[in-house]
Length: 280
Image (cartoon, rainbow, N blue to C red):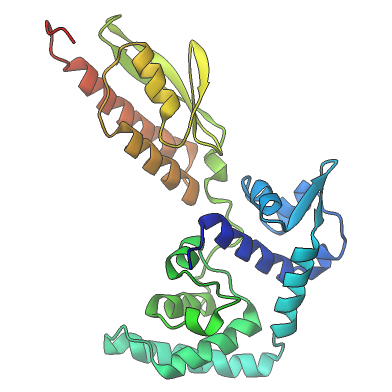
């Protein structure tokens, strides 16, 4: 079953509502509620509305019946027994350590059986890419989801405090920040300043005029072409990878700037070494 990144994110957001049902019960949520208490990222508001778990009205958000039903389903399956959890946790950690030390990556039946029991005690949240790659939802295909070394390893990390940082806003810290890069033009014989900004949709570039583009740097490429500046054939691929790198990690603006300057230098080398005297 194909699962998109957005569908995996919806799964995780529902998980957060289930673990914070008192917030859901208020019936009316502000942007601050969702951002500060459920750690919504900037793109999550759009994803939640399109995924039919929230509806928006007058700057407030309201849970849909679908969200309420899903949360109730999860809570009906949740087990609250601290003593049993402690026992299961100790068993799991011990048996996973044994598996790790053996050098084998083949999950044992004991671990596969223990994992779902622990899962319904703690409702862990995993990285979206793990859900996408497994093509399984942890809260729906629980037994099958844990039939793999890496998903068992993720649960181990969760139990040892090294799991997913749910509170991380990741790339939101570098979103909508203008970064200046210098681009050389043979036509004018000097470098000009281009302002580049990573947005939810892609990259926005300002040089004389603002261009809004996709994640593959269409705005940058169109700006370069307008000024007859040669650029590397794979520029769009690198812009796409940088967008995703900046989105999925807690990259500072300075770190994004470093990578953009590398790309600018790459463009400049291409432009500066363009053959002379050949008509194209």
